[in-house]
Length: 321
Image (cartoon, rainbow, N blue to C red; front, side, top):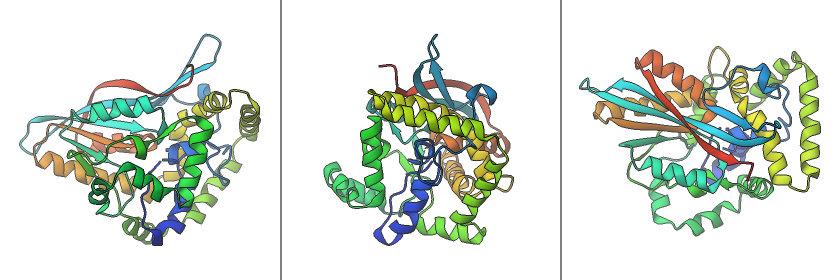
């Protein structure tokens, strides 16, 4: 659900957030990926896709034999107005934070066409300046020394996928940081009376009210996938169905009162959007994890008077090939 780039003093506490949140950066995918020890096969989102309302932002394509072919992520375009009253296009570019290299290459090309790309990353305000000064190989070496990186490497190896933070070029001039700093994130959670423990308990209490049959079935599927000779493909097939149901997980996490994890961070992104519109920019992308998209869309429609004009799909996981 959210990529995090943290200084060492924040790493221990935020590592737990990174690992445990977002059935979407490793957020959306970790929660659906064996997510973490706390959300393994979470029954709250382990429901059969056919029983849930189809997502506008994530879809799973299956063949005539019901075999999973791909996991696709939507780009949905909306018409809004700039400060001067001229029409502008805002694209909600959802993402999964572990995907095919080709998927991220396509996104890099897409992003060249925007006046600004408002991106998700819980990181200090000076992180981009440091990124521009460092070579990719040096950044990878730094990541190898922390727990998040160890988890990332394990997932990358098992699923045969790549990491968003490795493949997307965040140093280009039109990229605009549109997320909280680690300190702001901690302070906002504290002010709202939120905690990770409280969040986990909330989800656990809600999942107790759900039928456990699907959760048990998902666990069986995961075990069989781990024993499959083509482990990456088998695991991706199981996990794709979980990720497709991310909106149910998001609803449980955000609730009626919202949350720092989703709602408050989305508000930061929309504040940056207002800045871009005040500059009369006419083509803007909000590049966030797919779990953020339902709330972002709702606020775009209500607060910006947005009108949906088109949608298209990019394949994030090509599972068939």
